[in-house]
Image 1 (cartoon, rainbow, N blue to C red):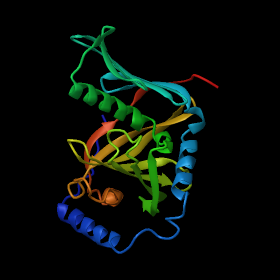
Image 2: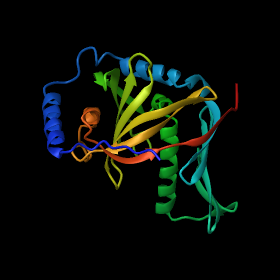
Image 3: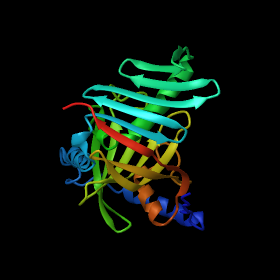
Length: 266
């Protein structure tokens, strides 16, 4: 069991830091270099390659996460996400693909309410989305903007904001993300997000346990939140600074096991 302690002994320091960072951010917009056309997209493409993007277009990925077994199948523009687990009601299998979502129990389709259908589809899509980062950042609906160069725990990073167009951005198109890509290795080592769903809030994730399976880089994550940057609209791009002073609280550990990768096309 991994234990993580990142709580600052006093919240006063975190509050002062957050206030100072907000004041600094208000002094001006991004630099001329930061706003250069295509810079963010170029860095994202470099990261996709560093994570094995050349292997991730036509592929089947299987893994275990918490109580479910997942299967992600990609074939160009076609996709299918599945998760399954045994239950007292039978063997539950959820499927989300280009045609929509369905739930099966022991192979028979189950009729769901609109709310349950949407909730199950959203949670399955979220797991697949995070598993497929940074490749999903090349989707057409992504709007990437270079923010700045940054340093986290003595390492150099590019800091990039990602938002989504309403058309093609899914139900969560209003969410805002910030990613930190290592300037030398091009790896996606940290990201934060501001989500606008019914349980709105903010999160910051730190990658660890990186390994390559079938040419694709996979990472587990420490998942944090903050009492000072906690509400939608708060400056999530400052959460890396809270990490540096140990002012983040651990929410969970995101671990995937038994990963298998199979190429499905040329």
